[in-house]
Amino acid sequence: MYKILFVCHGNICRSPMAEFIFNDLLSKQGIAGVHADSAATSTEEIGNGVHPGTAKILRRLGIDYSAHRARQMTRADCDKYDLLVGMDSANIRNMRRISGQPERYESKIFRLLDFTAAPRDISDPWYTGEFESTYNDVIEGCEGLLDYLRRGKII
Picture 1 (tube, helix red, strand yellow):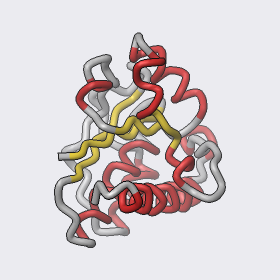
Picture 2 (cartoon, one colour):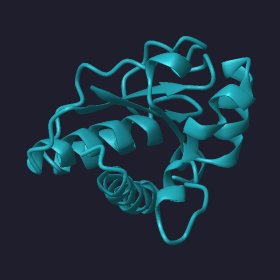
Picture 3 (cartoon, one colour):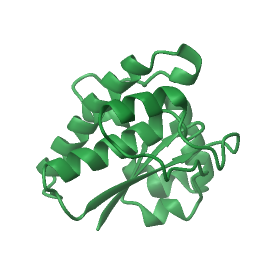
Picture 4 (spheres, one colour):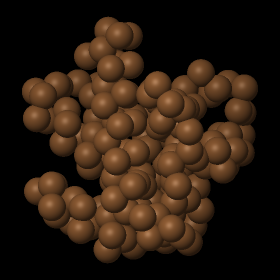
């Protein structure tokens, strides 16, 4: 099983959106052997469900997110997952700090939009309120990640 961990600040907006959308894409395309999860770099939202803005989008897509509870990324996740995918540069800095050995995990830490033709940060909709823009970036990144996995013969 190839495992991907999507990471954002609180694990209630961007990273669960990416987790559920990516797993939904895998399911709809009949791709087995790959699974995504999500986590936070902070402790602020631990135990909370997805943000209402993310929930609205996932409901519209017919994706069940009800079991999600925010959790913080751990050092053990760095070995457990094959890819650690942050949403922005601040997430990447914090993921490296959490890892305790950033040079050891450098080859598996990316931003989601690094898998696209236009690498960039995904803005945090908790601050911007722009959940549709976040969704557009997340779907672009998830499709780019699928292409990356295909090119690498992982799927």
